Length: 272
Length: 85
Image (cartoon, rainbow over all chains, first blue to last red; front, side, top):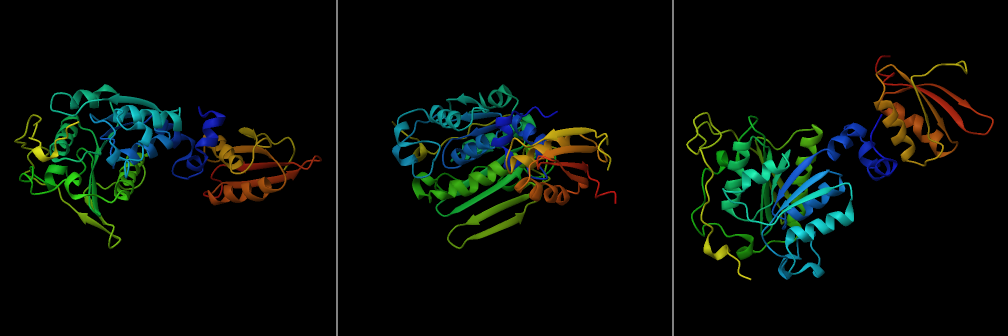
């Protein structure tokens, strides 16, 4: 017999009614564990939809505190939260939304020293990269390759966004496409370039969709594809990307055998 | 269909409204194997109009529908019975 309570049956009825979800699928979601790294433009909507969907364990990683300039897009935080640790603010929003969800908070910046322990802390099933800087993106990729964990990469800037999904042994990793860090200041971050607030909603929600599909075991993931979105022209492009047989980390003869802390460009550092 | 027909499961959905009616039937069917049968007790109106149609959409076969004296219905459905036809 289904372990769902009457309240859960009602809360998740629009899921359960779906042919590819059902009660068993909803139970998988309630048993699912997703780690969201960065609770900003991408991570905020991703974490909120995962919580609403009843993903039973959600980890939130962020070292920052809520700033007034975050609120234009980081919808998990409210005006009253300015000055509060983002993970704390995110945890409170999720707690108010759905008590089925257990939130684990990590109020720190991911580094080569802690990222593997954070992933192992709850043996997360899927990781969402909601970070806004290249050092973190390479770190998350490399840690997920080492820990054999699937993750969704994404980035947003101005009116553009992109995402791809790595599944161990099933397709390319982030380094297959972007072998190493871009030169300093070659690519601006959204702090310098700006971003339309809704971009995180669109792309972060797609990341949450990938996590839900992975947990449910349904549909096709963006494995082997980079999906790009241009809000000005309303264009989505799904670009096929192959595995790089000489990839520094996920190929058969890796040259990268430990995590690297790349230098954060000085212009990205925040001072409070 | 004789009144004594033995089913592999029973569910009463007279205490809930759409769409929880079908959600509950769906959950009960998940516990059965293909070809097994479920007896459903449901209300007149929206439930009797919608539940059998939703069941057919998901390839379950409605074997019988009987109205009780109090106006409610007894329906017997065979899990994925339309797939084997």
